[in-house]
Image 1 (tube, rainbow, N blue to C red):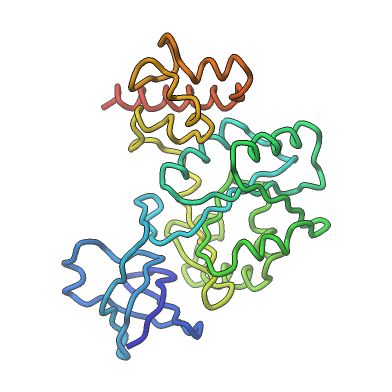
Image 2 (cartoon, rainbow, N blue to C red):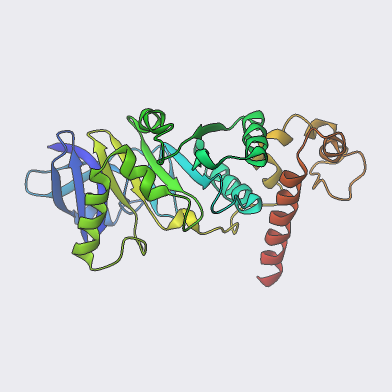
Length: 288
């Protein structure tokens, strides 16, 4: 028997990379198809010598969109400039990943273009408690730090589409990433930037990059109004002051969040993002 990780699913075949970085093309035993859950990219599995998945190891997490398992972290990439950071989009993506209970590394790419506004934003997210990594492929700032962050983990890269430099970052970390993505794109006759299914690309035997379309889609269908405030880490130290439980931190009297906002302990942009997402959730509820 061989153990490994599912790196892609294509046309009913699952491709499993073992501890020696060998790829095995596998089918799933019929009894597993009747089991509790379907096989996902990221699953750890045991396979037979004749190319069948015999068992799926216990997962430590799984997601529906994207349909993946066992993600250790998300590196959320935005550009310091060109394009400028869209704060609302950034905050929505942070909330979406917080809801999945996956650790986040916020990567500010193109840091050679930093200005004072971006520097202030970096300090804000550091003060909230996020790990922030500064990178630039122009002068190779932070590339070694990024390599270190990726070691021994399955990492999903997320961020706004176009111009933030995710592909350039990955190519700087390991040039073979461009080869792997190009090879898969040629095989399935589809462009690199139109991925429809998650795939893992190997940096080494136990370090993987996840290429997935799902982390670009901002949806809050399964986020409740009660859970939403918990997805803003800086809110936690003020909610005990709120008179009502649950408190939605909008019109209620005696609200710790609104008091902290007025006192400048919570950033206005973060509160605005909270209200925007609340409105999104309420609108979705009305439609259904």
